[in-house]
Image (cartoon, rainbow, N blue to C red; front, side):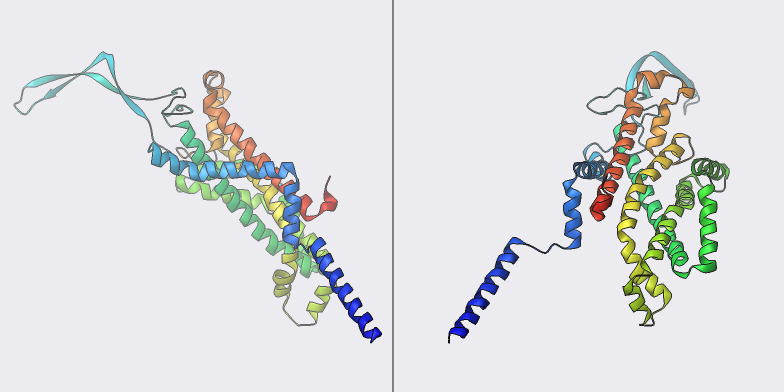
Length: 353
C-alpha cells in the first residue's frame, strides 16, 4: 500500500515537473528563431523599412498619383498663356479671299518648373513631372533587379548543382566556364553589350530592356554557381545523403529534392545582397544612355540630366531634377544590404561580426 502511494507521488511529481518545464520553455521552430534573430538587429529593421517605403512609393505611388491628379509617366505638361508677341498667318477662305490670322495666345511646355502644389518636385527639361517619373523609375529598377536575380539563381542552381554532385569532368567543364566569366570585367562588358544592342536598328527600343536584363544575368550568375557547388560538395557526404543512396532515387531527384533545399539560407542571403548590385548596374547603364530607353523613366537617366558635359546649369541650379533619384538609389541599395546582412546573421549566428 505504501509502495503504491510512493509510486503515485512520484508520478504526480513527474507530471508537475513536465508541466513546469513546458511552461518555462517553449519549442521554437527554426523559421521563428531566424525571424527573432533578424528583428533583434536595428539595421535589419531599418533596411526592411527602407525597402517597404521604396516598394510602396514605386508600385502604389503611381496609382495614387494617377487617381488624384491624372499624371502619367510620359505626360508632358503644357500651359496656355498670353504673349506680347503676335503670331500671324495668311490663309485663303472659301470665298477665295486672303485673310490674315492674328494669335496672341501660345501653348508653352512647362520646362524646368520649380516645385509647386501641382508639381511637388517640379518638372524636368522635357516637361515631365519629376515625382511621377521617380515612382515609375523605381518600378522599373525593382522589376529588373528581381527578374535578373531570379534568372541568376536558376542558372547558378542548375550548373552549380551539377558540378558539385557529379564532379569529375562535369565539374571541370562547368567550373572552367565559371572561371572564364569571372575573369571578365563586368561593367565594361555590359557597356559594350548595351552599346551593341542599342546600335541594332532592327531591335525596337521598347525591347532593349529585355536584352539589358539578359546581359546583366549573363555576367552575374557565376557567384551563385560557385556557392551552390561548394555547399553541395559539403552536403553530399552527410549521413542523410548516404541513406538516400540506398533508396535508389535518381541523381537529379537527390540534387533538387535533398541538396538544394539545404542551401536555401545561403541562396536567400546571396539573392538579397545581389539585388542592390543589379540596381547599381541598371542605373549606371541608364545614366550613360544604354539602359532603359527614353521616354521611359529610370533613376539613372534622371541623374544624367546633371551630367556636366551637358552644361552646369542643371547641376548647379536644379537639384530637384537629379538629387531625389540619387537619394532613392542609395536608400534602396542600403536597404537590401542591411536586410542581407541581417539574414546572414540570423541564419548563422556564428558569422555575426
